[in-house]
Structures are given as structure tokens and as C-alpha cells.
Length: 201
Image 1: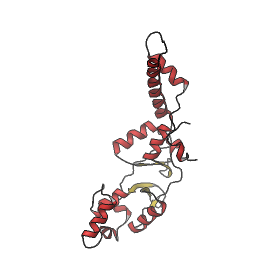
Image 2 (image 1 turned 90 degrees about the vertical axis):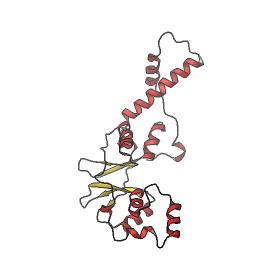
Image 3 (image 1 turned 60 degrees about the vertical axis):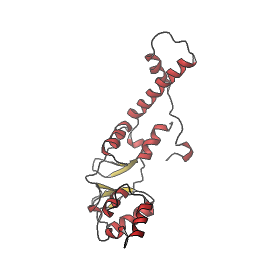
Image 4 (image 1 turned 30 degrees about the vertical axis):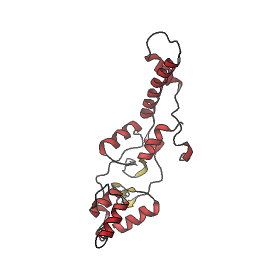
């Protein structure tokens, strides 16, 4: 069950073990003054974040309903599917249901020749200032031509700390979570990852 919108930024739950770990780092006798408490809190907060990063797994934060596109689809079909599902990207699966790539809006923009960071208004301006629309370049092409492959994937047991590092290293916005047969069982997006740090469970 996904968290309610109002709960997405609830503070990290600092456990007693985090406070004890923090207190053990402070040398000497503790005379609890506001300054001491602030110092303990800072240490405890750091321990809480570290604990969450190394204990919570992909299976706990992933979206289990994965919208996938098929390798056999053409770009018109893929664009229509993504628009209907209101998502900006999805894993690409082959005929056996195995993840073989990932496609996103950036891949479409690159194929259109407008650059992966182009805004919607830049595309409109391009279409209005030139003959035809850049999107027409996508006709008669299939998903295999633009998808990012091989797909960067992970298993359900990967920690959110490792996922965070993977997002930064590979510069990705979504991570398909697969089983041992490379079939999707979930997906972790940047939003899921950010929410995992601030949700108290």
C-alpha cells in the first residue's frame, strides 16, 4: 500500500538505538543542556539515516505494479501507452517477459534531435518555427532503436543505500526490480527513493 500524499514528508523515526549510539560518541559526562541535546540529536539523526539506508530494501519501497512496454512495440504505441499511464518512462520487456531495456522521455527527445533536456515549450517553439514537427521523425521506428540497453536492474534485496549510489553512478531516474529470471517484480523511482528517507514506519 502506497503512503498517503500528506505522509510523504513525515520525519525519520529516530529509534532508541540511534540515540544510544549517538550518546556513546560523545566523550565525557553528559550534562544535558540545549547544546548537548542538539549534538545528541544530530548524531542520532545521522545514525537513523545510516540504519535506514542499510536495513531497508528495494522490496519495501518499490512500486509493485510495473507498467512495462514490449520490445515489439513501435514508438507511436509506446508514446501512447506512456501517455495513458501518465508515466515518463518504463522497463522494456522481450517476448519472454524479461527486462531488456528502459525507455524514457529523454530517449524520445534524443531521437527527435532536440536534446534530452528540452522543455515542452522548446519543442512547441521548434514545431511552430519550422516546417513540420520534430515528432514526425519518430514514425516507423521501434522501441529497440531508442531504449537504454542493457537495462540497469536490481534485486528485491538491494538496500536503499546501494540503490541511491546506483542512481548517482548511472544517472538514472528509475530502477526495475527483477527476480532471478530477470522478470520485473517492481520498480523504484527517484520519488520512491526520496520518500524512503523521510517516511517514518
